[in-house]
Image (spheres, rainbow, N blue to C red):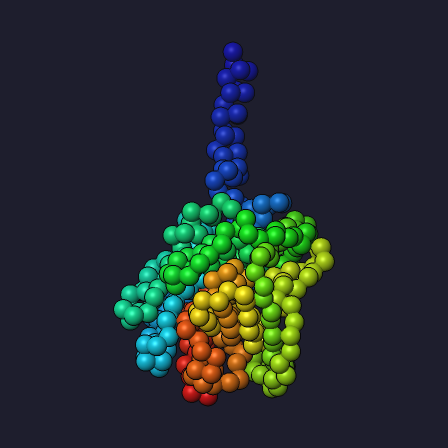
Length: 339
C-alpha cells in the first residue's frame, strides 16, 4: 500500500508540469520573429504575418483623401474606399492582443469619416466568413488570390457592375511557393513547409494589357525614369518553387497598367493600390470596359488630367490597412492630383 501511495503522489505532482507544456488544438504555438513578425503554428500549419500597428487617426486621414478626390472631380466620378485588412485581423486572436491593434476599429473610423457620397466597401465581415479557406498566404506578407476574389466581389456589388464566379476562371497553380516571410524571419519552419499558390485566369472575355514601366533609384522609393508604352501579359508565369509567385499579376508594382476588355458598358475603373491591390483587377474584366492600375507609390503623371483624358468613371482606393494608416500613403495620393 505504501508503494502504491508514493507512486500515485509522484504522478499527481507531474500533471501540472505536463499541462503547462501542452498546446491545445485551438491555440497554435506562437513565436515572435525578426521585425516583430508573428509566427503561429508548426510544420505544415505554420503561418507568419505582421501585427497591425496603425492608428485610427491616419485611417481617418485616408478617408479624407477619398473625400478630396470626390470633390476634385466635382462628383462626376464614383469614389470607393476599400481598405484591405491584413492577416492579423483573422489569425492569432487573443494570443496576439498585446502586440496587435484592432483593424476592425481603425477601418470603422475610416468609414465614419467618409463623405456620404463616397462608398465604403467593408471586407472584414465577408472575409471572416471565409477565414478557414486559403484567403491569406502562410509564407508571404500578401493575401492569397482567393481572398482578393472575395474582395473584388464585394466591390463589384458596391459599384453595381456584373461579376462572374470562379466557375468562369481557369484555376492555375505554382507549387512549393515560399514567400517573403522566410526572408524576413529566417524561420526554418516556413522554408521547409511551402504552400501551393493558386490563381484564377478569366475565360470567355477578351483583354489586352499595356504598361509604362518605371525605373527606381537605389532607395526603391523614387521614380527616376518612365519607360515607353508597350503591350504585355497581365498574368505572368512562374515555375514551381519560385518565391515570386505573387508577381503573377502584372509582374509587380513598378508600372502603370491599362487593361482594355471586351466588356462594353461604359464603365472605366482606376485602381489606386499597393501590392495587395495587384490581385484585384483580374476579377473585374467582366465588370469594366477599361481598368487602369496606379500604385500609390509610383506615378509620374497628373492624376486629375489622367482621369479626364481616359474617361474614368470609377476610382477605387485599395490599400492594405497598414499602408492606408500611414502619412506617406496619403501624402502620395494627395500629391498625384496636383503634381
